[in-house]
Image (cartoon, rainbow over all chains, first blue to last red; front, side, top):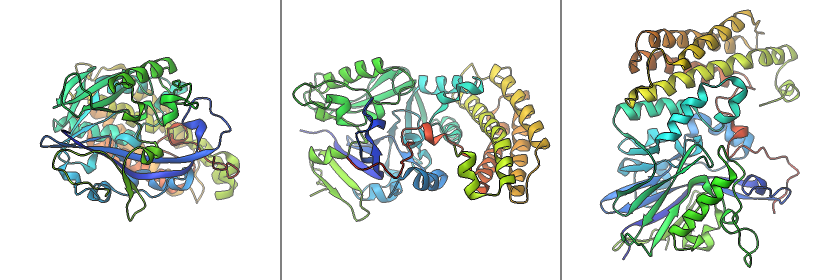
Length: 292
Length: 152
């Protein structure tokens, strides 16, 4: 029995991304494809997402021309591949505040957004620092902050303080403070709805970019290797990885990094007519496959 | 952030000088917009921290004075004239937003000029190379690929 259908939806990609940007210390080891994806969680009368991507209108041209991001498509097109419209989305869990994860909130007019309060408050604090601290503002778009104002006024912004269980039935939010950002969080779906779940998935945002962050390079001698970019610390990233892996019973394949192209090797998937991949992690009872 | 050498391929030397001179002021205005928006999020979320005497507002006002003075001193080339006008517009709108925040940190009186100011900054960023509203080069996706890097 599965309570939720779970899909990973690609909305853009960088074809050749240096591995050193994904795995700490992996210098001069070439490049690989870096997909940009968001997650859809459908079931129990709700359709939720983990992150919403970025708004191409605002900075798509810069990303395309300078950083090689290709193939961006809007949520209407991407979600349409699994028969969902942006207006259908009821809840969005923002793993962190970087532009490529929360930069498109205005495309989801009916959703309630969840973010860690610390992510916002430390963000605001960072802005009060002098210019020489500007590295701490990396990846933040002031326009996203203005859109968050509107969400708050419409009572569609929920600031979460730490962990929160059953934000939807069987869906838990877990804080990962001072890791990739000040107030990161990850989402656990207990797909059997059991408190001692044997069928869990963790959606980790940028706490892991790729499988090597979760198991290293040697399958015979696994290790955690953090992502390269941390506002917090590599230590906190490693300890958070241990927590995430434990929450899925030790099966690292159930910790889902949205930037990992090789999910296609683990789960059924298909390429859409726009060249974007849809990966299907689980199907709720009675739900039709969107990849077969 | 594009270097003088990279900019010189795109625009004339005098405009490169103008870009290098005004980039700091552009970034300061962007910072002011971020600071005001951050305070508004706190206000809209009902935080007690959001108040007209918040120290961040004092910092934003000081930054605004410096940026406004710098922009008045700058001398745009013909190529940069429209860019300079957008920056002056942004300065004016953000002054209004700061002035509204002086009185009471109510959302609308601040947010409306703030949005106008941010929009002017976007137009400025579109008008000349070398100005970015987000520091992409430090973000997750922001590793510029030199041509010689080969796939693994």
